[in-house]
Amino acid sequence: MGADPRRHGPRRGGRTGTGALRVPALLACSGVLLAGCASMPDSGDIHAVKASQRADSQVRVYAVPPRQGATPGEIVAGFLEAMTSDDTNFATARKYLTPDASRKWRPDASTTVLTAAPDSGLPERGRADYPGMSYPLFGKQIATVDSQHAYQAVPPTTYRETIHLSEQSGPDGKEWRIDSLPTGLVLGASDFQRSYRSVNKYYFASERNVVVADPVYIRQRLDPVTRMDPVTQTVKALLEGPTNWLKQVVESPFPTGTALKEGTKSLPLDDRNALKVPLNEKASNVGRPECVQLAAQILFTLRDLTSTRVDQVELQRADGSQLCVLDRGQAEAIAPDHNSGKPINQYFVDKKNRLALLTGGAKDIGEPQNVPGPFGDGQLPVSVVGVARHERTAAAVSKDSSHLYVTSIISDSRPGSPVVTSKGKTPLNRLSAPSWDGRDDLWVADRDPGNPALLHLAGGTGTPQAVKIVPGLDGARIEAVKVSADGVRIALLLSKGGKTTLKIGRVEHPGPKGSPLVIVADLRPAAPQMETVTAVSWAGPSRLVVVGKESGGVQQVRYIQTDGSSSAASILPGLNQVMAVTASDDESRPLVAYSKDDGIVRLPAGANWQTLVKEGSSPVYPG
Image: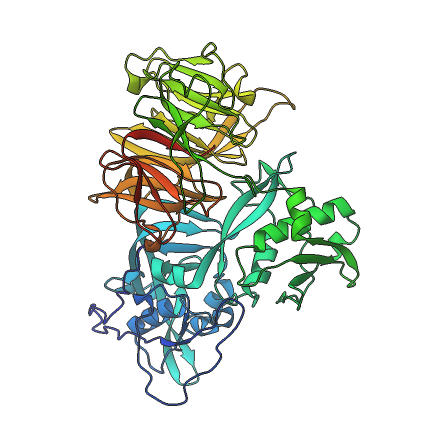
């Protein structure tokens, strides 16, 4: 999302001849996540500043109430500005509304995100049966945030709504006020980035001790409506349950209606970095297993939110008595992170079409070594590969892309029979690179135009099963497949009409336990701002790294959240002719890519791209 400056400016004069002056916003210092301003200057001038000129979360916007005798244009501009503030219950913004409109307006119902702050057009006078003034609002919409705090990116589309004003009788005579307005908040991208931050809630995958990230957006500071601090907002959102898109494949152990004890606005840490969470009566009789599961969810959810590490969570009944206590180590035992504490190697296909690995840490990489077995000793030349997350087995596509093999990469063996065969006439119309999920199941796409399919192999060696996609692909073809470590979400590159787009789907197992039936449901765009996407990899619990181009732009490598949100800061250093990219579930590990110009390269934190191997292709981390 870009950070374009606000364009309210002086309004163009309408037929009424009442062009509005912009109502200024006053900026003051703001605190960090859980603290307010330490001090305020006691001298110097106050200057009007355009709030949307920077997406700085440390800047705080204070809205200005309408002046006496304000014109309709001033009322509209002032209200749009006041929506960007952190004012308690948007009290100042409500001063621009009629009493009835203020009662009906729910700023927490939804947020419409535009590329820049909404711009108002020429006003129109009302009719005899509907007097007053109407101002059209224009913009380019890029996302919506719903009442569950879930962000959903959309392809940039024209936004047009209307604000209507009428004259109201007040103590000082007639005053213009807004009596009809769009639903919720309408914010430019930079105001949204300044006011909100992304947080991963965590829920358990259905019938599995694996946690799944559910990203939402919360306020950077106190929520204007609830007056909760960010930690309390996050715990509240967690207790309210998973977002609609994810809830079919995850579960939470607590009874419906479980919430924070009424009146809870803050959840401070004590001197032992322990967090006490008081719950309502719905939670009073839950058992210990369910209690520790919820405590684990809270620990996972808060680990990246606060600047101070949360080491322990204590859940309390409504009467203040203790339900259970859980520390970080115990939480990891309940639902361990994928690859937590394990060495993770980087793999690639060398110039002789053999599978090789690069050992070593994030700073030092050793010389490439070919893996044992037919993929590494040259018995079976390969083109693209996927390494199982336990790093004992790999799947590889033959050099001509027609056959998929699975074999050990830790011991010598003979190549077995292919587990999948494509009848496509050319390599580009045959098998995609394979991908392993956290269940150690294997996924691959057959790109044969005569018989396209997304295939799933339970345990990596089971009979290939065609995966049903609901709703269908509408003529698009699957070019690449990447499954998340939790096995609940899948990223698909889909080509149609000369363009390749990225979508995220939900992986469902609707049959009885052990059934081979698998469905990918509810595909949604993950990078709608990109005209075409060349490569994708998971890069954390709810983050992807993608290679692609925006309309009229040049190739970029950038991070994108699974909900489609991103920022200018997520664009990575430039690299030419990138054909493939891979990232680890461990976000501390460097990115690795294949560039036609530079070979196999990596991007350590805080550095630029570095060449690892001049000749090679198909770089992968396990997964």
